[in-house]
Length: 79
Image (cartoon, rainbow, N blue to C red; front, side, top):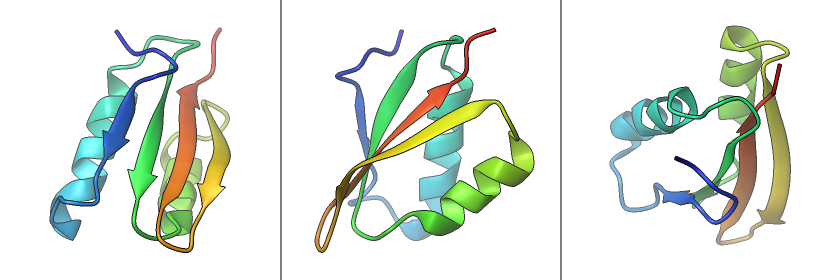
């Protein structure tokens, strides 16, 4: 379903809805797949939420780090 070119741009979403969309997108990934999160701020708190809820099950790679746009490749670990 999700490929390297899939982006989830949450910049236009209300803040209360962003994490819901992000975790739904992550939940739809098959092992080994990923998506690129596009955000208007550093999503570091989201990283900590992933670490707490999905320890050792996800990957996190910054592709772009502001100052206006942040892009993070978030993946589900295979196996």
